[in-house]
Amino acid sequence: MEIQKMFEETRPGRVWLAGAGPGDAGLLTVKTKELMGSADVIVYDALIGVEILCQLPADKELIFVGKRAGHHAVEQEEINRILLEKAMEGKNVLRLKGGDPFVFGRGGEELELLVEEGVPFEIVPGVTSATAVLAYAGIPLTHRDYVSSFHVITGHPRKDGTSRIDYPALVKMGGTLVFLMGLSKLEEICGGLLHAGMRADMPAAVLERGTSARQRNIVSDIGHLPARARDAKAATPAIITVGEACSLSSEFCWTEKRILGGRQFIVTRPKRQGEDLARRLRTLGAQVLEIPAIETVPVRFNAAFAESVERFANREGEAWLVFTSPAGVRTFFAEMMEQGLDVRNIFRKKAEVKLAVIGSATRDALREYGLAADLMPPVYDSENLGKALAREAAEGSEILIARAAQGSKNLIPPLENAGLKVTDLALYETRFLSHGWCREPVLAALKAGEVDGVIFTSASTVRGFAREFWPERVLAFCIGERTACEARKYGMETVVAKENSVDAVVEMICEGK
Image (cartoon, rainbow, N blue to C red; front, side, top):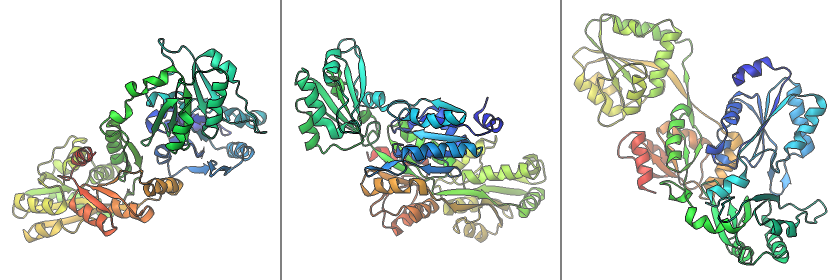
């Protein structure tokens, strides 16, 4: 049964306690990803990776209950109450937690009140950092030549400050040891193991910010690890691991060997196109923050649409239908269906209809409807499209441009100068988007120099991004010179792709790695 249908049939509300993994968006489970899109309310904490945080839907009720600067923004009892109250309102609640909710995630505590009040719930396991972070560091938890067991231990002391760790038992078992939340007790942990009889040259490591673009592996042995970690200024979030298999890290490391391994980018393209670009960058090893700076909104009650299409298709002779973006293509055909029209209303009339597109992405969008472009300029911008069409179109041709209400002014003059009749049909408006729930961590990453570049595919994406995120230093990867010109207005350093296409942008990023 589809999750959305399940939601509609389940009343009162239900709570899903789901793990978001250790940070890498690629480790988010399919079920949790579906729930992010279907839940009414998302209650999330500070351990959610910023890459995943940027993917939370803006149209949901988002409630932050995380821990910042050594204190809880919301106490555990209050979190429990929020889950109960939202469910009792008939809402379906996704409680999104870092890692796995049942691996030192206090998931059991959050269920107690729900059980007491009879609220239905489900548990969605997540990828725990105890396994994932070691895997990203090239450290096997088990290896038959080295170790046959592993043990996950919390580094947090009891409320009275005393340790809860049985060091002699851990040493005796001889497995790989994984300490979560223990960096502040690193010296005590290493000392406890040494005092319990573990040899001083036992391989050990501090794994900082595991699975993220800025992960760092500090590998040593338990005798020297505290000093090494201090010298390296190791910081949380971090995992401590001890065991023979730690010695394999240098041999089995893999994340930094990817083409874009260790790099992080922001994609500002509208959601549908941005997802494809983000996927390509992630395949090459990059971490990607998806922050659509704009969205396209169809012009509602578009009375001019049917009239323009009918007049265009019923004239004698040659007529050109022009698209300047994939959004324009999709909005055009969606509006045709909305008004009870289809392609026969264009291609089975009097006019000899030809199709022109601004570039390869728009051409590919047209192919989704079984249509091939007759004209595409060698340089993908409005001015060159106008010039190419002015040369190609027959004298007296009708030109119908289906595009955004705020379309470029450079397209029409070459056509009018050639004596062509032009109709500029506004299909959609471009609106700037807000990302308030992830603004703080994204700005922090920008200011810390942890973002290797921001990718812009139009001047409007630059303006939309700058409205909300205008840091001091940004390297802007731009799809064309017009986009780069806009970025320079905001003081950004720019790099321009060889041609106005996403392929060229990806190539440019890889060449500059």
